[in-house]
Length: 145
Image (cartoon, rainbow, N blue to C red; front, side, top):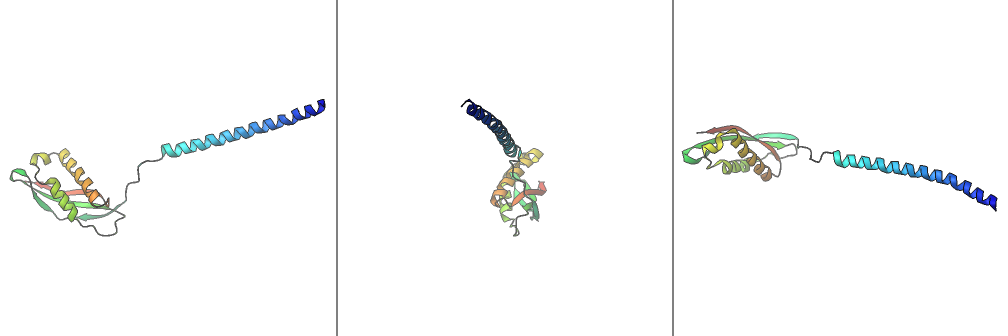
């Protein structure tokens, strides 16, 4: 019986070495998989890709009243996204522009910073009105008197 016990001890020793190798390989696979997953989730761009520019729709100039007897002549263009299949109707954009700039003072619109702030607000409103089919607006004429 002593010989049987020795054979059992000797056969278990190679299995333990095999288990250690299997465990080591399993740990390496898990670490590599975890590292790849972490890279994918942490370093990928969380921002959606910007839309591709499409057609530019140039709108007619519109004149609107400012306060104290002044007026503003505004001409603008809409930059549509490439996804737009139909020609845009500029009437909504012109209506929003008139609502945005009417009854402002000349002082409120004289500085570049103030004008850019008004343009930014107008761009957001136009984007919502056109269901994000308009990606940018261009003020091609901005004359106050």
